[in-house]
Length: 305
Length: 217
Ligand SMILES: NC(=O)c1ccc[n+]([C@@H]2O[C@H](COP(=O)([O-])OP(=O)(O)OC[C@H]3O[C@@H](n4cnc5c(N)ncnc54)[C@H](OP(=O)(O)O)[C@@H]3O)[C@@H](O)[C@H]2O)c1
Image 1 (tube, rainbow over the protein chains, first blue to last red):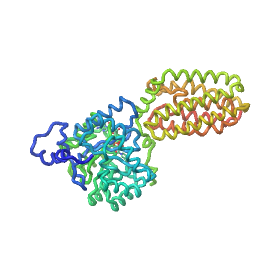
Image 2 (cartoon, each protein chain N blue to C red):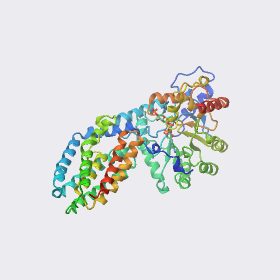
Image 3 (cartoon, chains in turn orange, yellow):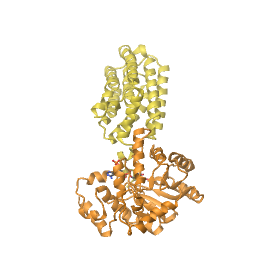
């Protein structure tokens, strides 16, 4: 999908109109907080949608429709970025099913991956993924978990130059191979990097996030809830009342607001099977974001639990 | 720290328990009552085999070849592979096992003499795979529609086959062991990662098989 005038206007809508207008009702995309993709300035809502496990439902018609409802609620709530990978089983066809039902929302920002050790197979894999989604081209293709990145990246840069995709990125998770990620960030003209970062896993604050700012690389944060474990871990503890001023009403929003308030982070991509959860997650991109003082308080509070 | 040390068992699970067990339920419902046909067919061959091992040299491996082939094709390849890409490899392994069973049927000569423990252990394992396995779903607190039965699902097929092979005493037994044992380990770990109590069953099948194989008499 290419950037549309509507998307730009909607995205800019936040910055321009919010101070002047009363708070929009939920579901108005314009009231979602966005951050610019550094390379282009294109505004990106700070909460996206992951698809690992949650959308791998095979050909089960009931579950496919449940996922389609999550996708519908995601776009209705103003979301843009959906992240997937050929590694995620049937998640790609599930996304295609959901997008078809919505007649391919213009707002969609498709983030895919290439995940194959044989570099010669990269192009065919991306093409197969594109078929599953049913989109003309991907907005972003990332090298999944650094697999054969030395070979895949040049091929992706060529595709970008040829207009076959819009941005190139690389991913890792759970703190793996961060030194190598830094080397790629420092030496390759990538547009996006995807890593794990949350209120307990803060190692990226030391080097990766500052480097991303310096190099103008957009940052996607995966596993914001450690696959749900953080929410299960904290849910019995009281939510501190001082986060209410940011609009956070539950632990999911506490955790997301911490992540997306880091200046280098472009967006977080929580995954969910539930419509109420996708709405809750998008609501973390409403209200305000914690400032540095509150961020420190959030860390102290959580670490004391 | 090595990269591998950062992985947990759950990191390898690429689907939720709900999706997995619904897959089995829908498969069972689509093919009902084939489950009963498979069990009856296996009993029709195994009961005489238990009484007169030499009479059913060809029939025993044949029904198992059929069961392995069917479950590789219908379950692993057509269904499970849609949520777990590793299952295309598992299906290939099951087809290889099907071939080995056919080979065993063709090459069937006089069975090796089997000691009492191995023979009765084998009978026990086959009965477990055929008649007890379907109730594990209930014991694990799942819907009876997710019951695993011989010929339809890999685990009871593996258990029944191992039991039968021990019982009739194949000289080629060693050839038939690796794929079932690797499968049981994989299946047990998958169920374990899903925190399903049924995980104990495939592990128990491996342990029982190894004990009975080790028992020479
Ligand atoms: N190397 C890589 O490239 C890589 C690695 C890991 C992840 N990723 C990407 O990052 C995405 C996110 O990571 P993840 O899926 O591993 O974990 P996650 O987003 O941290 O957690 C997902 C879990 O959180 C639960 N959840 C979501 N919203 C919730 C809410 N509002 N309240 C309570 N529970 C909620 C979901 O359960 P419910 O279904 O019940 O809501 C789901 O089980 C992935 O889907 C994938 O796209 C990429």
